[in-house]
Length: 77
Image 1: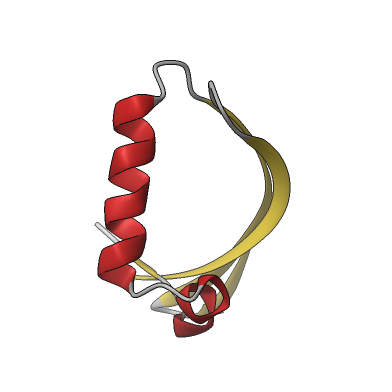
Image 2: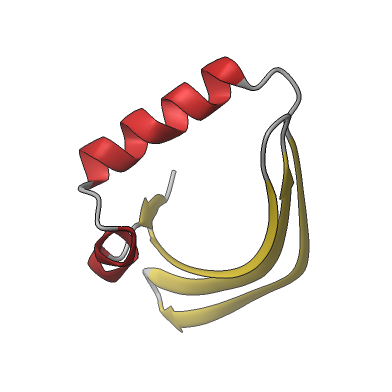
């Protein structure tokens, strides 16, 4: 199975370490009983035989928060 790579610029923008970001996400899932995530505009582009770039639009809604954001990720095999 492939591995999703989180850019260091992602957590720097949020001013969180990866560990702190994960703790924050865990709390959000614990306290929000209704979470809906819709992914659209999915694009996958091969970089080489072991890597792909993935971009998509995420529509996130929970009990206390909602946003729509475009995301980019790199995955490696």
